[in-house]
Length: 138
Image (tube, rainbow, N blue to C red; front, side, top):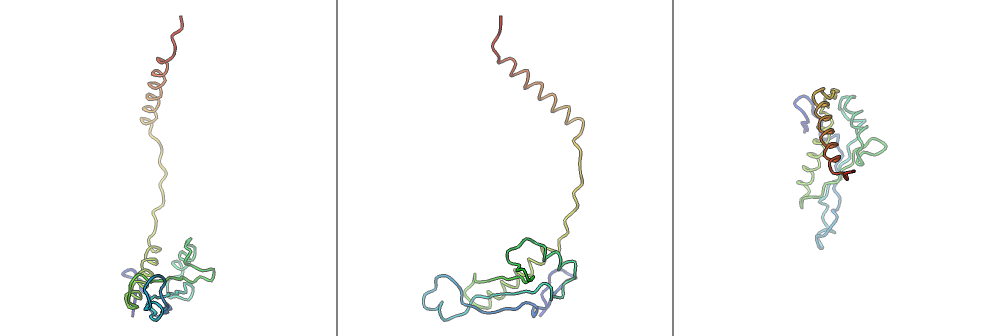
């Protein structure tokens, strides 16, 4: 099955290694028997993503990316394995989609002459106000 990231970019869900594990937390006796959590491992280097996007994903400062370039995610929000599987794949798609967004380059701006003049006027007013508060000398 294809995971659609953008209209022009998609990956095969077989590229993500999904493994069912036991979830943490409360749940009584059932938590010791049922493997409802999903452990997702996505090898960025071996994926079919474009090279530029792979480099961007590897350079993100994300604790979920290992030194070997593997994205590791644990999904255990839901009670069923199917829901956690869908959640893990959706979170993977969102993470990749966030890296596809190109940030606009910052355009440097200058402070206008009028703003500088206004700032000077305000400084003069403050100065005059504080001068008036001083002790009067005879």
